[in-house]
Amino acid sequence: MSRSTPADSADFHALYAAHYSELVAMLYALCGDLGDAQDMAQESFARAWQRWSAVVTYDDPVAWLRRVGYNLATSRWRRRGVARRFLERSRVENAPELSPNRVALVAALRTLPTGQRKALVLHYLADLPVDDIARELSVPSGTVKSWLHRGRAAMASLLKEEEVAP
Amino acid sequence: MTELEPDPLASAFAGLRTAVREEVVGPGSTELRARAARRTRRHRLTVTSLAAVVLVAAGMTVTHWPERHEPAQNLGRPSADFSKVNWSTERVVLPAVPGCPGGTTLGGSNPVGYGEIAGMGAPVAIVPVNCPDNTPLVFLRNTPGGTLAAVAVVDPGSQIRVDAVQVTGDKVTVGMNPPASTALAPTQQRIYVFRDGQFSQVTKYQGTVDANNTTLTLPDGGSPECPGGKLTFQGGIARTPGAEYRIGSNLGIAEFADLDKDGVSEMLTPVTCVPSTKPLARGLETALFVLRMTEMGTAFTVVATPYAWERTPATALEAWELHNPQLTLYTNKQSQTLNWDGKRFS
Image (cartoon, rainbow over all chains, first blue to last red; front, side, top):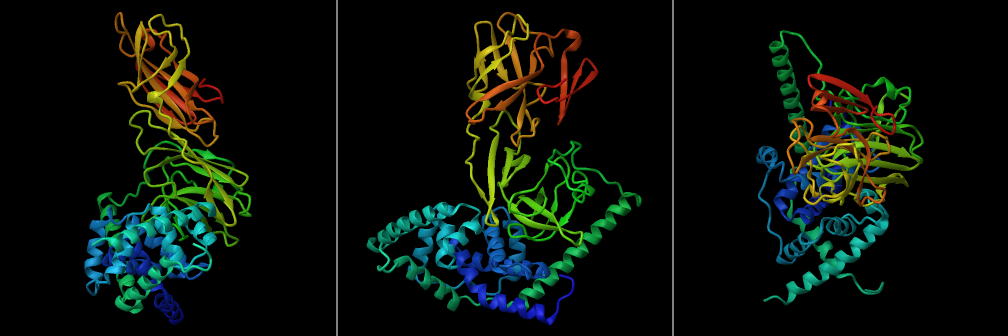
């Protein structure tokens, strides 16, 4: 980003304020590590600012942020070394501990195939309708419906097992 | 679950969202902007330093060299503006688009497709782009201002090497192969359809077929030791009473190219013949065949034989190079360049 204006800063702050925690929650649900999720969300926003003159013109900058976040999550193992150097500088606090129920939910999500997991996360955490999920994941709507159906069934079973487990 | 029953997952996810919002304190937008600015400055400094080092090392002589020497497979007809870009040698910096937050075209031998995709409203160029986290195909359009705009992205996956792209109506056919042609690994075709402003993949992989385990009818080239015929390969080997046939050669491995420009790569495949009586002279044991995957994606057929087994020692094969649409055969320190005429190399 070569030159930024106060309006740019205000727009970026508005986007951050409205969607930072939502992006962290989504990435946490996808990758299962709250610390990583925060790092990746911060990285996504930092990249957005680096390209703000383009990002701000998108119809849905949040979709762009999510996409960057997915890509970071997908490639986080490969990028571990590179990311570590950035993250060591950027992590500002230790990841908080969430309640066992929240952890169980995320652990159950981690057992699902990637498509089902992404569909559930976009549906429940980003509140996207089926057609928007299909567009974001570049798959037909029918596939999304199938993923949601199977994902819900699998999650219900997994969380029920968690409840009855000693 | 009926419409009236509460969705237990909805409340669980809502709880997760609330917990993250309450528990996670981010660094703030000001800190992230400062972080991005520091990174940009570091990047510029690094690039400048590297450029200076290169210029000094090169004695202030700047040379452009392509990554590979093979020409790009230009499929379709470029529009006037697109044709001004030499995609095979230039590295074009592209703007961000969902799926690729900015990147640079790969250049080199990578394919470039052109076409008018129904629903996009203007001609597009389809180029592989090196993005921060992936290497997708990016669809580019000329803007009225004369710049390139990225309008869509299709990402076949990082482990896939795209060999050909073809546009037909609202369909984009992508021919692809594994990243390294270590043997006759499966070739694939995927079709994406552009509807409602997005691409959806409408075909599954057709890469289940493996030429190492298939039946090929090799033409009888007149060689008494290696007559060809219908051969069933298992693990890359087929045996007849008179000879053993092996897919592959110590001279080289299979190469992929979309010779007929239908969006699916053909394979130039060496097959080595070892007669059971006595071995053939060096260079005569290898024949070259062009294989095409059947429309059903379940087998291969032989469509051409650029080099058969009936040769004499004077024309023993030493090497070959495939630069679509040209095949160069190197025999006994001489070379012969053949052109693909639509049916065979001639």
